[in-house]
Length: 153
Image 1 (cartoon, rainbow, N blue to C red):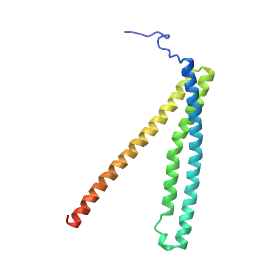
Image 2 (tube, helix red, strand yellow):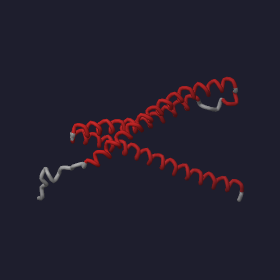
Image 3 (cartoon, rainbow, N blue to C red):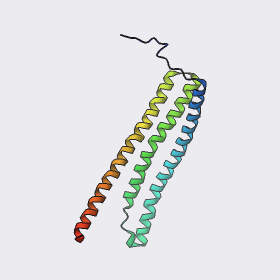
Image 4 (cartoon, rainbow, N blue to C red):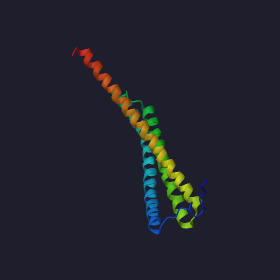
């Protein structure tokens, strides 16, 4: 069996690499803060969209087809889905900055764990959205085909 010594198993980050990581942490923190602000705006939109559509439906009965609770719930779900990637980015930024300041490999490991969580969450959401697009395309093609059959073409 070939065992690596601790020296061979140690990863060193050069000074330019540390600078790149430090700058990446700053950008990640910026993007996370912008994401949290956007999440707050989505929550505000959820609260006010339900109120706006509810008052519109009261003044104009023909606009009563908007489900106000459904709109609010949809916006809140979107805000929740947007919150977690921002949280993981912020945590990665904080732990990476701490690791670079202290030289702690444990903090660096936790930072990379948060980065992995960010990419896993975004990857899963991407797969879900691509699957929904595929389903919509299938239903669109089937609906178009049924429409053509109904017209006799």
